[in-house]
Length: 338
Image (cartoon, rainbow, N blue to C red):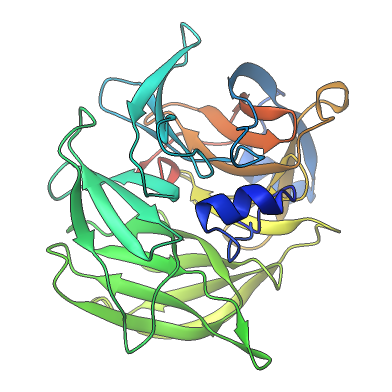
């Protein structure tokens, strides 16, 4: 999630979101890195999922994740009560349906747990994490409350192999100091630990392909930090891995494919930047210029598990859309939700 992509303060007030931010040719990652290439991949429009909500003045799609039947779930962060807050999409038939709504949540990400198979949603505005049954029913609270004496603004989630949650707590600045954190919550929701703090509005979070470390994007610094883990869930070291040259755009959510390539969403431009795990800029995924009017962010992407077809959530005053492109490598858990 990000500072919201277009400014509709009345709508933000309604939802209590004033603190929010907001098919080209396939490219071979090794060849691209070897030649220092930065290819442009043109995404193709699949369908429009939402229009601007009258009550909130905006729509903002996020958190795409495929279920075991190949259907795509997408959250609409600014959907008001009674309208779909989670949609289920048949991407082949280009059909969508309401999957979940409630009168409270402002959900910024969705992901299936490898532990219990339920869908976990982050409620940015209320600091909560909730879960749903795979069919969309049985809404349950999972975690709420302060962590180390401070409330959370949970944005994206990454699960480890055992089902523990690693959450980007997208807190902003106070007295000039960055207050964002990465929080680890055990799979039962009973214990929460701050792994790192002092981050600048952390947003995207994803394990690398072998689970040795975490990539974390910092929205207000346009950088991606790498957190090396120690094998017990704690952080062994931390450094700035990427500085994203994005002009007026800012770093949003992150996905990682089977080859370890990073897909960095952008708020402020309907595009994604693709990097190798060693920092080479491999490609830029863009919405065609003729379709970009009214679109202001490409927040996130899900790559079909085991395949290369990728579906990107794109939003703006023109509505909320799905765009598709061919990823550089096949999809894995790290490129399916968050």
